Image (cartoon, rainbow, N blue to C red; front, side, top):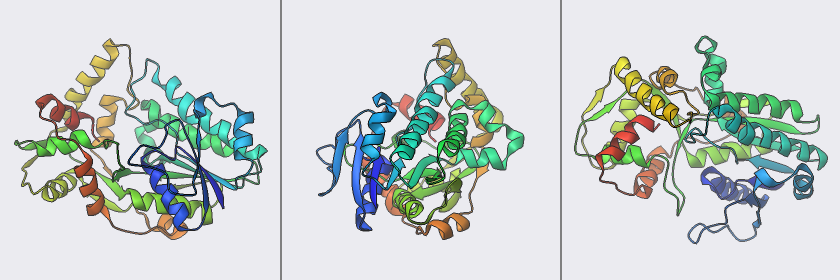
Length: 336
């Protein structure tokens, strides 16, 4: 297949490019960021530098015309704290941009599309009593992204969404989003963290699942991805062990976690900004076990298992060491 990777110079996009090439596909990358000195695109990959946000549907259709498929990895994530109301920002970047791409793909007779989404959408379906999308603008945008993307796709375009959990790994010249947590673990003190846990994956497995979606996935379907399920204590302990550190981890009471998150939300509110994840409501998710059984998605997309220790080591190595106590504390509060 001839595949356009939108956001192909980013973290997951970089691995998707290599996975596509390994399977014999032809790749074009569309990104507003040029490849870096240490993260150059492989030979044979065509690069188009442009900002998706500034491209109209007609230009996108002309870009997609030679393609058989696309990967959409250009959305924004929950680290952004835009001006209130936050949903306007997340809708503009995650929902409207995908719909524009899908409509352009319809015009260009593209037949396959994979969207790199979030596993929070899966838990919004699984735990309707929590009203997850209602409380969190970022998660609402991911839920709406899938709905509006499926609605916009014509009958000849098989569009699917991968609901991706927390991912580890690294690419050259980019600091991992996990760097604050890594530095918190590097600190000389005991670690304080909430109860609960999450599903985690190595970035290589996500790339395998993404290309598997293009090759054998079904249209108008969401695939929750996962590999290993771990409590936060297990994850922090594993990371500490890989650093050669023995750490004491103290589980924080939920009310203490909510108080800390309330303070963070109050600070944003005073600045006229809003988090994509409501800090207080997010405590209920953070302290839950957001575990995923990957069997069905793994069987459908044929992606592999394992590689997490290697990915954790790469994450740790790529995280520059910080020495400020405030940066350790910020890491504890905001990552993941």
